[in-house]
Image (cartoon, rainbow, N blue to C red; front, side, top):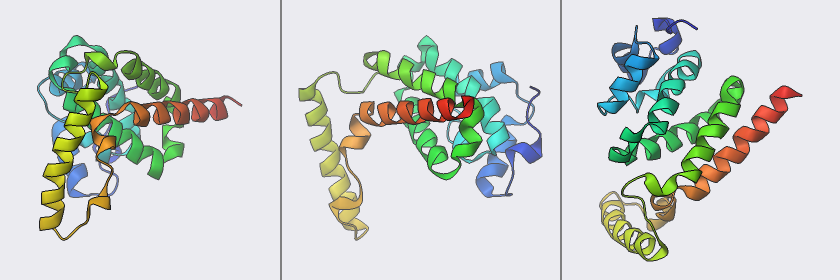
Length: 178
């Protein structure tokens, strides 16, 4: 597959898609991996068009499988959020890459302990939950929100979310093959 066109990256002409065009246009997978290594472009995966996403998710998968990810654990968290968003709003567009997405979710689960700053045991997990809950409670109060706005646990321990995604992608891949 050739690199995506501007129209494949920017489907709806949103500001986020225009930003993705600026960063990704003309970049092959190797260049996209280097961009992720530099801490750039992860958020664009959420908003680029589905054809471009299916192309550039290959670079994200390579990046996650590469050792450098141990220095950028926020990439995994953002990647999981992107997959959840895309699965919710355009599951049919993920059919061609569902097996690969299930595979990378499996890899994340198998190597979960290698991603820095994620809790390594229950004590650390609870300490991080309590700390984040305190920070968010203050922020939510300032914005007039209550603490039911989100489950803090879902941001601390990604394993249940990744497992759910893996199961959903395996189901999509199975549905596609029948």
